[in-house]
Image (tube, rainbow, N blue to C red; front, side):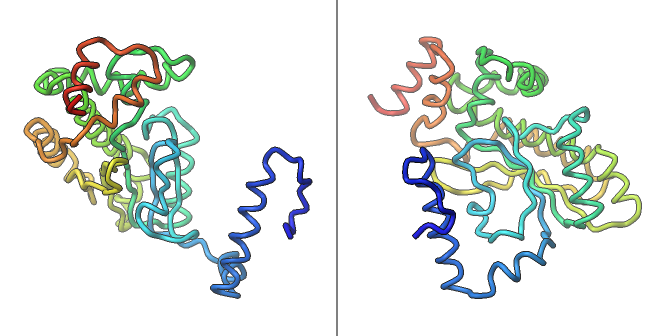
Length: 258
């Protein structure tokens, strides 16, 4: 019986049932699980990722509750005027003393797709201007890649790299490094199509390493063919935002061997 006592007619009764079953299962596996968890929040990792429902931080890196501090927004953007994100970083660095900040983009990101194609999605257009800025900054590099998934994936990677730069330049991080605190920032990309995380090489553990590492990582993206997908998992997301140019539709069909 569901101990949450949710009426059967409740439209979300199945979620309460799922929760009840999960709690019982955890207690059966480990009777002290929740009593131990209530006193435990000492994560070594802050995950800054996308809000996409297909990108669950803990599950992707195989860590249980209590092990990862998480901040998510559309297209994993870090903006120096976003007090929400800045507060999370400050709390993680100063209070929780995390040792790693993981900035994780993901292939198939609808937000990046909208920014790449210049598609209107509504209020979120204002937020996605930050990704459009990344697109404009690296327009020459992106134009080297075919229109379609290849270009989309490169922008996913470049966006993650740029957001690592933004994290590194927050006062919380620069102050931590100045006082000798152990803290490393990482740029990753997750593949929804295969469940794998890619290390983009954007790994910074002191301020002096930022510029050189950034230049190397951007150069690597310009020549990187290693992450080409077998089919276009991106276009399905982009299509939901509205009609895509015919040339992109052609790329989709080609990649899907239609």
